[in-house]
Amino acid sequence: MARFCSNCGNELNENTDVCLSCGHLVNTNIRANNQGKALATISVIFGSLGFYPLIFIGSIVGLVTSLIGINDTNNRYAGRSKIGLGLSIGSLGFWILMLFLLTVITREIIR
Image 1 (tube, rainbow, N blue to C red):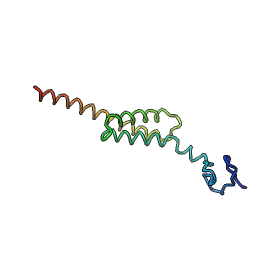
Image 2: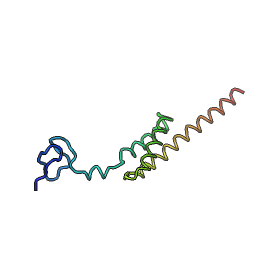
Image 3: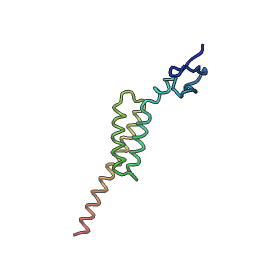
Image 4: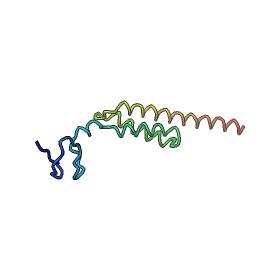
């Protein structure tokens, strides 16, 4: 039985996932299988970059994206978002500790 694209009406090959004429995604299972993957990956990347070079910005972006990913009920990658949350909290804590130590050392030098 021939299949047709719901967007442009072009006839589709038997095992195709994307219409070659207009680029429309005809296999919706691909989209469902990757639900939340990008957000979870962003949380891990920014959580890691929070250690260096993005410092606080990376930590905060990673924290926000990981919390969104964890609370999204359709996210199939909630575990990856939890890793991003751990990295973000770790990097934020690291820089807060560094600022605290820097102020203590600076006070000792000034005395």
